[in-house]
Length: 449
Image (tube, rainbow, N blue to C red; front, side):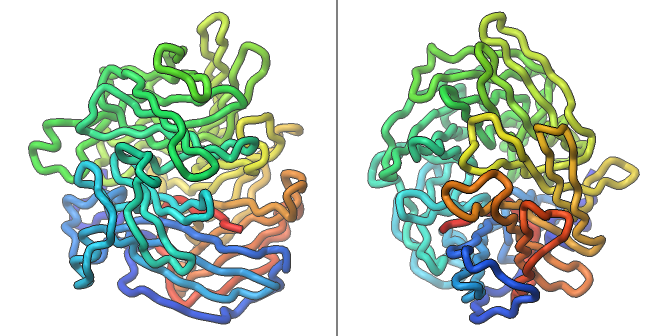
């Protein structure tokens, strides 16, 4: 259990930074590929005021986006900016940012995406997307041109064939439903439906295949007792709730969902999913449970790569562990999302003798063709974030490009953007972009070309 006197999510690699920085013409060790033309952005919690360790939850820190602009073999700039929630604007003595808030929530601290020519900081549980400028200044809290009636999600999935975003949203004041929305390539909601569920589950992600959206209805639910007692994060493990996943046809209606019962667990992120005849195969990072004893962050046993095979004709599920190496933030190349892939990867985790995750210092890659696993150790003092693949071109193979991730050196308290040749991962970074400050561990990053 987390020591509330020294909440781990406020110290060490998680400790927040106190200043917004801007730096130009960043030093590079090695050679940046000239094909990299865009921004690597990453969002995460960074509380800006004095915080009570006993009541702080990692998922609730004020959002801060870090960004690096690459072009013509150079690192043009680095910026870090707090996402202007009402709280952040007040603390900085600024006027509130325009835009209607939903359900009293506006702290977008989990991911940052590009869609329809706009940049959005996003979070789950009710807040709307927050539009950012190219330089990461907050523009507005957005209802997607009046088409988004409620909040959004931290983890939409973009269909590589249509450019549509598929998202599953939830909010404590809308119990017993998950809201499925489709955002068109033009940035406006084109489909919305409420899917009934038995309670008020916390849902971080969804998964897509060619024809389906995978829904997760798992045993972390809104806890009224915790909320009444003043808990800032009133979601907790509920052993009695049960666990299931659902297949909803893309653009479908609630009555079309086919549910499959599974063993209780929690899933923050899937690697990928695809269809094989009447079966749907899902590879994912499975946590044995979460928020059962540690109510400050997800640390209830290391997650590892599992496969669920859903038999649509028989209604059965086969659950099998593919690897026991602790891993999170699993991904595949965007072009194969929802289709059979060859390469998948994630951030490898180090675990202490008590089973507690204490470092994220490895890049782990899986080859589905050979069944092999490759591990790149980034060093004992490195704390690495989510790893993103940038293809060399729009027609590149799954390993023809580069892996990018933000890291911090815990010994020197400095930050870097690592660029790793995907086809020669074992050789380590081809370039290290030197950043002007430390990068706390956070959540999701993406490349915006």
